Image (cartoon, rainbow, N blue to C red; front, side, top):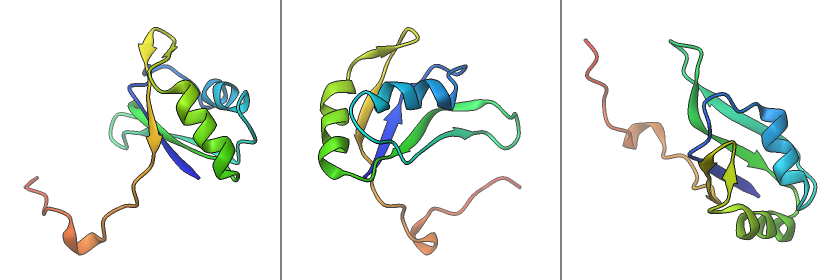
Length: 92
């Protein structure tokens, strides 16, 4: 199960996020999204848990809880939109 985790503290490390989710089952991977221009966290990430039951238990237990002073938003990640459906960028 791919889990979205939002409203993360900008200095939170992936190992700390993994520790929080590991209390609810096996964690396959953790990825905090980093801004490619600044190198800083964007304040959200994804946790992959191979067992859907454990993933749902983690969502139920962690959504709305506090981690490093920030209240996390935790839910099942939505699949990314295909490239052609994304809005064009106006950065020129």
